[in-house]
Image (cartoon, rainbow, N blue to C red; front, side, top):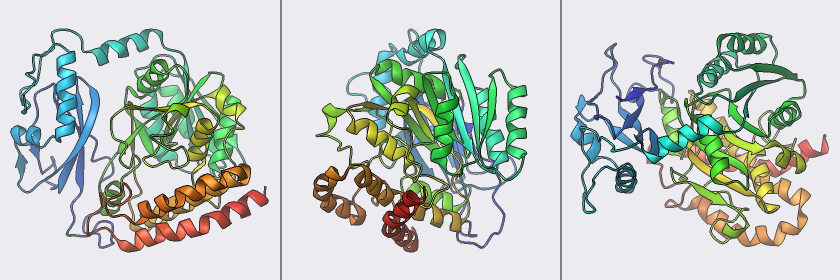
Length: 452
């Protein structure tokens, strides 16, 4: 398997002078490299001659995602040996572990990885498990909630129609789009692929209204959500189902969201800020009442998961009342309906599994103002999330007050999960905009809640 490029679908404007794609910055290619296969040479130029500044690489072994790395193009070509030498030490340990599990003789003291690939003596455990899931897993409904994004919706649905998982249903919830384009995109996808695709129109604006509508529409116990600005890895739903099978008590399973492109500086900055994982990485994790001493459910950083790659048992989330209609995109608060739902599962004794083999790719906002607004929304959503908790659970106030010093430290600590990945080029005004959103979130939540 060679590197699979996911760049080039949306060419960046040449010579743009705005902050998100200035002439001194070059786009980064986004690649998959499977270390079990011959490692390719990376060329800084594509077939049109355009030069990239670097490569963001998802590392796999026998197709299993195990880590990521960034390689900057200081020269025109990066030789295969330089690629494997750049693999982070912790990821190299995981790779060697997967190689041994597949019967590849790797000495315990081995430090280097081969560039020529590896031949397993049998089927690797990850692929064996996936085959079992393909043969006998339960039916799952993949839901796309959308509003006035027909091109992104079509791209997302195309990736869902290419899923390897055979027992798949698709549902599009149109959240009050202003034109008929989303319905037409859903119809075209349904006629072009193997999986049945339903379309419903939800007239009440707000992502929580759309999610709650999907819960009323689905007929399967497992429901997985993906956003209309994402595409799914071909084995995304296999990973989601695997998460539920490996953790039968789980009420929710969340996967990992990776960049779909890094064509502008704004997109690169978003990923530098932590993207959608913010340090969660590629190690599976289980959150439950028994893990509260390791990860407090009231402090979701690194995140338990994110709504653009999240699946739940429909009966479980419906029993908890669904999603808070005062939270989420399309409301005054801009976000955090997913965080609130996952936290509610944990507070009521449920189990959430983070399953990094369930991969989606997100196309971050390309323009600087969109990036700035997104960070404002994240700040607003975060403080609105805590306001929603206190609104419904006022007895949590002492626990939240005890967490306050830790939260304030994390907000300002340059070595904390929120800030340690950013560099000097990261715009300080965006961080200030995030904090401004946090200041506004409680007021906006109260206004949204009282207007219902």
